[in-house]
Image (cartoon, rainbow, N blue to C red; front, side, top):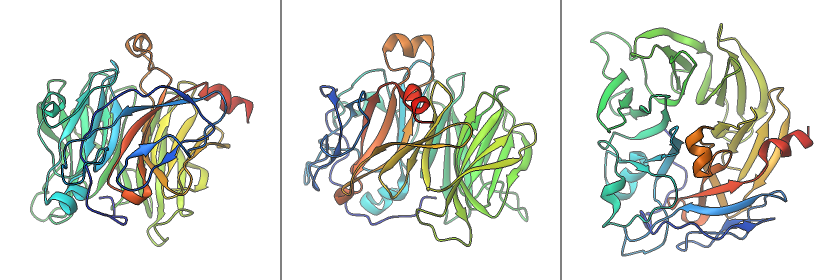
Length: 366
């Protein structure tokens, strides 16, 4: 379960979604509270452009500010559809809701208002979504948790949106829960599913049907949070740090695990990686929580600075769409999609699209 940072009442849920004119930036930043996100302070390298991809209005007429309150995770399927979820943890504080909806947006911008929201809803609302991932079949996996009941769950949604419990849920009487606070989800080439649990300090390995293969495929006294599959036979694992370390920037770690045996190799220490995604060229891009930065890690662990948001904005998560014929045809393959929010209006979040030569940029700075 994500711990709550300073929260304020949300100012809007979904406003119109438009593709803003591309800006060649040396910066992009957050606006003041109540006005959403603008392009004015986030520093990008030369040769990169940024546009607004998802934003919204009309869901909180009392406030009227643009943005997507409580959006917590984003992911893509092989056709380029964008999925995102709102977290009930945040919605509970704002609206008193215990469940949160999942959305699916087709390629390209969409206008989401209270009148059009229904066409983007995907499947049922789920209890406090944390992370999502889509496998090669277009099935959507969502990790959820219920801290009051003491267990977590992973749901699988079919491409049509039908949901069923995939793993976890209420344990048998007298048995410990398989999951307590599941977060990141990843798949390997065989379809096996990996789930990080930051409460138990493990990464659980399951087969494609949900049968447990190893309850402690990776284990340690750490808050494992984010997972990214590397087709070279590895799993990137982001940790919020050891249980006895402060939950703050500087305590995090990023590992690369060998899928043959789960053995971890520490590649980078310090950042809390709230979101990670592998570029088409095999470099890991990560959102550094509570610092307003995006950086890249090479397979050898060399850090390359990429973007910063200044003092008034931050990022929560990010994703590269899979590189497929469909995403290349749609023109989004190789682009990085980033959820951003202004620090002065924390619940209001938007998704921006960054385009440019990501892997060439990293190669030139190694």
